Length: 300
Length: 169
Image (tube, rainbow over all chains, first blue to last red; front, side):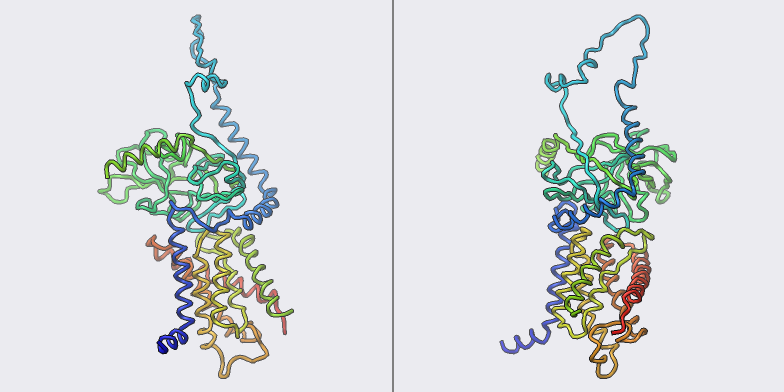
């Protein structure tokens, strides 16, 4: 017993070192799991407030770029409005489209013909990084303003990431710029598809360039062109259909026998000067999730 | 100014500098600017080793909180803090450094000794940091280049810091 005490005292520093390192390693691996929520992060009051103050100053330097991106987004949305379209039929046949008439108001919801599936909430980016292996974005909107973990996040021009953890007034978003190998249990990517051919693939970031990502699983039978648009598939519960992910830049087969292309995608979102994002609340997500979970548990 | 107060100020200053200045500067994907670990390097010679490691943990966790990298910087800092006394022992002349110099600096250790001391520990810190950050992605060349370039960048920053807060006490 006495020898043990002497032993422990002699190597006390080393054991303390081991203990501290084990604590750190446990924290790292608990945090690395994308599915789990983190405990201590920049959503807390101290760092959230500090980032908020800092952003108040540096926000002014980006006002011009922010304005430009918001205006171009407005133009895109105006082009999608129903009032921007006219009927091709200009002849003497008069058709009264009653559904069109009703669709502008709440009538559809009242009569049960339509129900809201996605709710968008805006959030101001107060911290952002692009040069890490896994990048996070902090926004000024949290639990009290309706943000929950695992909501999809998009920017004015495309997909941004998913909500990782929330505090009362802040939320931390796992950016699409999270280095991933594209497969495996910890893989992080966006379910995407080609706008033209509707082939399904997964977009993930390889950690090399914050402007580009990799799209995999697109079969080699597809005829690709530089500039083809890649959009969200709508299969995951995070994002609605047809949100831009990026544009095809270069594509190649890994080797002669491979059946799928490896496509380099220019990301639609410019992560360097992100100022505003929209957090997407999928109101039917719980139902979809429950159904999928119960089906998976049946097959196990 | 007492050593305690000086170190507390340095802790806060370096943390803020790291979070709000250096992390916002984007040089290249392979270079990440790190200066915060200078706090550990500049602690007094005679600080007890457990205190050194606990301070490393505190510093690392504070930075991890801001950067959402739970535990990664803390691991690297504790690693560096544990090895610091060994490096100082190797580098110190017979009978230790002059007793009236309490903290490591270019004056107390000599320019070349200080640079060796700093570069070894910064390299070890970056080795631990980036091994853990890029862990499991199997890209060894990328990792080694990032360690190398970031170490050089940190050394430049440390020398600049030392020149800026140059004092002959």
